[in-house]
Image (cartoon, rainbow, N blue to C red; front, side):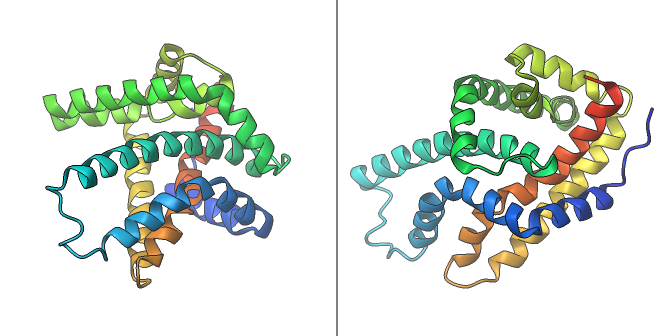
Length: 225
């Protein structure tokens, strides 16, 4: 088995890719659909309690609809981001319009995969922590595989499990480090006042996803999927 890059090397490489001027501009634009929701979320924390009464039916319904819409837009943004990461790492054409157009082709299948993953993870963690972590590692690369290899839901899950076969602990360790990196960046940004930090953080999704994507590309090359 080819030796995998250390997690901090992958993070360093991800930061270098993300902060490159043209890449930064492109990836931030990919996440712009999330901007209205992050702004509303930031504003919500400043709404007086008398107005934001959770017992108010219309306020509750409106919040619920907004959350559902936010999830749907978030999934579309994630599909677009995966396509965009392929472009910035392989010197592809950095066209936001073409990326969004390509994302629509995968959206509904990706929505189904996301629903399946949510149910699988919930089931795993309801049983015990260990089965939950097992599923997280097994299916960590299923989203990338669906978009880049044009696989179905079942194929994506099975191929992802195949990628991590025999290297479970190495992948788990890297996932933990990547998660810690994301948390640190978000904590640092949270210091920015008036909710601006959370808004900025919502536009940095490409940075959070890049280390895992780079790890996926290493495994993809080694195993020749």
